[in-house]
Amino acid sequence: MNQRNQLLVLSPEADDYAARIGAAGLPGLQVHTAVSPQQVPVPARSANLLLGSPDLIAAWLEQAGRLDWVQSTAAGVNELCQPGLRRDYRLTNVRDVLGPSMSEYVFAYMLAVERRMMRLYQAQQEHVWLGSDHSGYRCLHELTLGVIGLGSIGRHIAATGAHFGMRVLGLRNHPQALEHVERVFGPDELEAFLPQPDYLVMVLPDTPATHGFMNAQRLALMKPEAVLINVGRGATVDEAALLQALRRRTLRAAVLDVFEHEPLPPDSPLWDLPEVLITPHNSARSFARQIVGIFIDNYRRFLSGQALKYRIDFERGY
Image 1 (cartoon, one colour):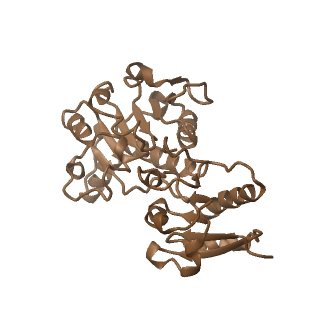
Image 2 (image 1 turned 90 degrees about the vertical axis):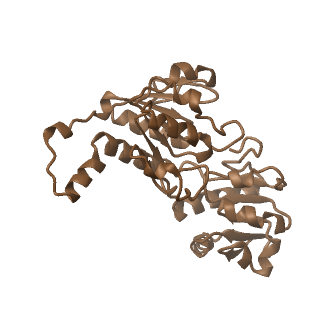
Image 3 (image 1 turned 30 degrees about the vertical axis):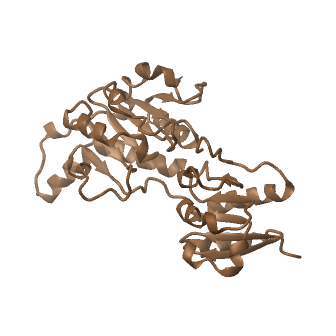
C-alpha cells in the first residue's frame, strides 16, 4: 500500500508512541520520530501529521510543511494558540484521561492539609509525640468544594468530592445542571459563589479571558479559612495578590502545581511561605496507551472524513 500520510512524533517518549502506533497497523501511515525539533529527520520535515508535546510542536511549527492535523499529547495547548503562530491545520488535545490522576492529586493535598500531615512528618523527624490538641481536623464530608472549570477534569474532581460526601459547587461560562454538583454558577455570580467553598479548585485553561482570573478582588471574596488549589494554568492566578492574601491571613493556604513562570524561580517568595504547598507541574500524568488510543481513534476519523474529537478553537484556546 502506498503511504499517503506522514506522521512526525515529536516527544521525549517518541519511540514509545511510535511503537504503539505501529502495533495498531493503521493504514496509509508512515511514522517518523524525534525527541526535539533539532533532531527531526529530513524525511519527516514534510509530514502532514504531528503528534507530540505542545512546546516542542510550537518550536517546530514554522519549519513544518503542509499540515493537516496536529494531535497534542497534553490537555493544555496554550503554546500553540499564541498570536502570530500558524493556524492552518486542525488541532486536537487529550481529554477524559487526566481526571483520575488530577483528582488523586487534589484530594491527596486536601487530606494532607486537613490531617496536618506536614506537621506530623516534621514532628516525626524531630522525634516529638504531638499531643491530642494537635490532631484536630475537619472531615471532608463537613466541607464545601468549589470547582472553577467544569470540563472533563473538573467534573471528575467534582464527582470525587461528592463521593467523599462534600457539598460540591461549580462555576463555568455556560451554567447547566451537572451530576454531583449541587449548583453550577455563571461568571456573573462570582460574588455568590466565591464566599462558599472551603476548598476552591481551579482547572482553568490559560486564555485571554482567564489570564489573572483570580485577582485580589476575587480572593477577597473567599472565606479566611479557605484553601485555594490550582491545577489548571499558573497565569490564571495573580500571584502577587495571592501572596498578599496569604500574608494577611485572609486565605488559609494554597496548593499550587502551576505557576505563571515555570520552573518557579528560586527567588520567588512563594517558596518560603509555610501556607503554600508547591509541586512542579506534575498533578497529571498522561499515559502513552491512552494518548495513542485517542490518536488512533482520531486517525480513523481523519481517514473517513469525520469530525476529529477534542478539536481546539484557536481563539478560545480550548
